[in-house]
Length: 103
Image 1 (cartoon, rainbow, N blue to C red):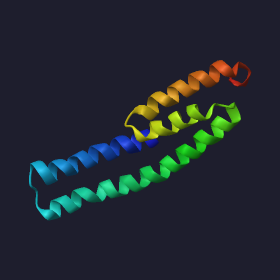
Image 2 (cartoon, one colour):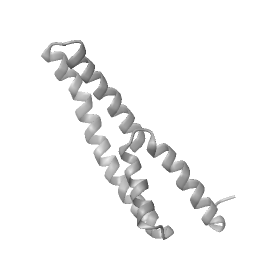
Image 3 (spheres, rainbow, N blue to C red):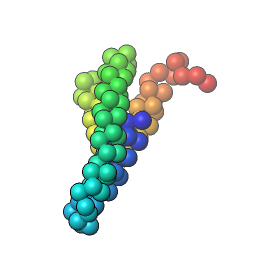
């Protein structure tokens, strides 16, 4: 969810920048374009906090090095990186814990 929220935030923020800088839109149009950015930004912020907490809980349970947990947590700040981080963490978890994986 963090990755989806960040991608949506980038799309709507880019739209706002285009309206404001390239198209020289009216102030009303710019304010209207900023509303979704504010809402999605707030939602992404809350989801990112949950993402970081889940990362720290998983890191503690899997006994990861702190550097791995920081890299995974930082992936939520780069568009599309959280999708790759999730796949990587899933593969690593399955490789390290074959007995805990449902067949």
